Length: 494
Image 1: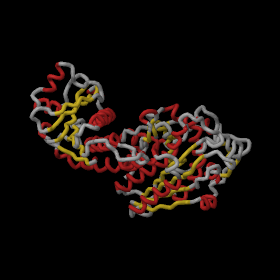
Image 2 (image 1 turned 180 degrees about the horizontal axis):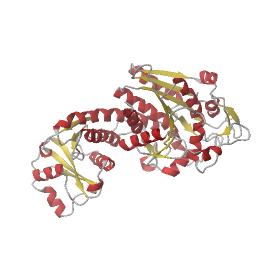
Image 3 (image 1 turned 90 degrees about the vertical axis):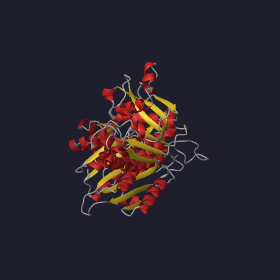
Image 4 (image 1 turned 45 degrees about the vertical axis):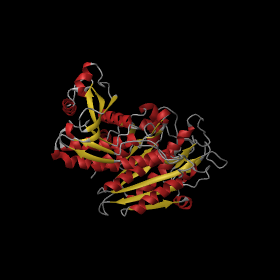
């Protein structure tokens, strides 16, 4: 898909389709009004008969509109004028592009952000427009036979009101393409079945990325190296699986060698049965998505490399399967983590925190400026926040504010959850330094406190994406979150 920015009279832009908006009260934005005049009041007639799409994200396709230079007109409801913001813009644009699927339209120009003024705002709206377009056109095909028969627009233009802001729009397009590429990679990895996307497959993905980019270096740790490092918590999770464990490391150097790196740690459980504490069968197929934390940080790394950001970034992905078996870890077992701390396993389905704690300990060797771990960690976070917000837990108020702000700017929102001592006390054990689980209530904060025991002295935040990493039901599939939020945060650090 190609993207471009366009300025000038909306009624004079040659295209297969002009995408224009209508507010809920029937008012027409300036660009829509210009096209209304060019069509001799066509929209006035539709309004007179109550046929305008005033409901938010509702679309009406009008092919062959008079003697205009565009072949068709797509009217899109924008909702209330006073509430039309980036979030509603993305919903309206996505609805418009999905309406065009199968229409035969090969190129279109969107006027849904034509009203925006100022370089920064034009950059933001154009960038998120590109991300929205790629997301709306995404189609998983890897394990399907045959080629896609879907007919979708190949070129999408974004209209801006003033030509002097063309550079900002072009920058938004470039950044949007890079971020969307990272999101699409994360979605592809998440959507792959577990018999394809194994720890070895993720490792190969990282190696292939490093081969393509000079600033990227890959290092893959196998079972023997992991055992030698003393990663007893990670090894305890994978004891019942035949698929060999991996720790995948990608290093990107975009700044001076003495510049402290930011480290991203992603949970890479490529299939989670729950182990001996077996999950119930309904929806267990969705446990292939339990590596979406890993997919998210791999996708973020791809975006950073393509953006060529002037930072040093390191990615650490502990990856394994959590399977039941004769050698699987049992409830009541006590294991020793890489840090030397002992852990009583009360629940083998609380495995994500076990593989992450060793990865966080390993990441200390890089002397990071900041370390962020990303994981589909707890069902409790899904209960608390649903599929709208990712959960952020950290003891660093400034870091929390930075991440929350990045989420708002990227329309990839998060909510801060508590990380208080009361939750930490529930991890007490009579047989080890602490336990890996403490019941259902407050589970997201308890899990984060567990990880906090391995991050003393670090500038660290935990991001729980259990509710946002994938969708269920008819729209089942990975979302690519939180790539946009992470890249926005990294851009702010530049």
